[in-house]
Length: 382
Ligand SMILES: *Cc1c(COP(=O)(O)O)cnc(C)c1O
Image (spheres, protein in one colour):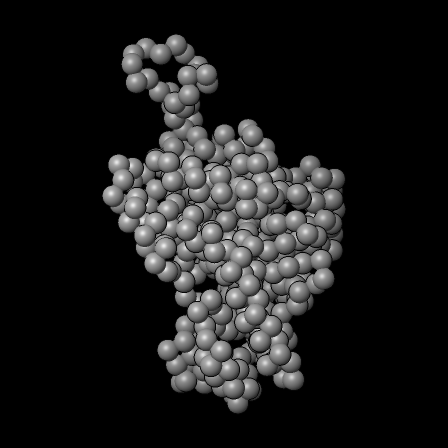
């Protein structure tokens, strides 16, 4: 059986986790801080806050940016539901901007057009969440120019893109955004079991996220609002959550982070092998513009019709090759369908992508023989 994705765990990872299990700290210990420091250094951001998952990272970033009732959050319809749900968690309204069919990322031209309309209607978003689909960075320069022009906060949902570069800077460095979130779910490039992080260069944003991740409780006496009434005093200053990452998870995440470059290199080799093997087919293959370096979280090909796609999916399954579909456009979900949106419910590029695409197996331990088998079976079923 060949799945579409699979984590890569070695003896170092296992040892890192068992070390924590033998230590006094299973959570709120030193490994979380070690991981945060290493992650911030790796991507070139000033602050990293480790959290229980990527969804929590999106939620808290939105809250810390002040997103609330009466506000709008915009995102791409071609993502996992979490990219939009963070808006609903904050009681904001969610609007979508269609993708560019070549990059599969939010389309900067459509974004510019929609923002101009929103300005006239006085419904500009407070927050824009962009997604680096499949690991390919969005065109951040023109997007940042737009968000700066209109005074919008920009969050990079980089669940797919740890290890990717845009214009030579690492995704997560915050060169073009207010904050970046990562996920360490096992289907992503780094696996912590569950895990996530917020990366930012804004000291106050980092502090807000950190506090909200631990119930909204402030333990630092410098930031208390009243003098301590008793020993072991702490203050709850906001309604926060328990979104902390445990040291057990952090140990795995840190051990995996040490291998990020190796993982990305392996993924890039396999992406190149797909490109070579599938170039002479009618498939639309993913692109990598020269100013981008993709970590290739997934390899998504587009067929000429949904009939061919469905047939290939079935044929590959008969060969024990399991592909996937990324994603059902969020606006098509039963939760989102009835929600009123100024910009409507039709995003043809995302819908076309959904109808005609498949995600092929791509993971670090996929062997050359397995990949050759996938390519052969796919070609035969076209
Ligand atoms: C996986 C994913 C998330 C959510 O991350 P979790 O760690 O599973 O909560 C958010 N956005 C995108 C684009 C994702 O792929």
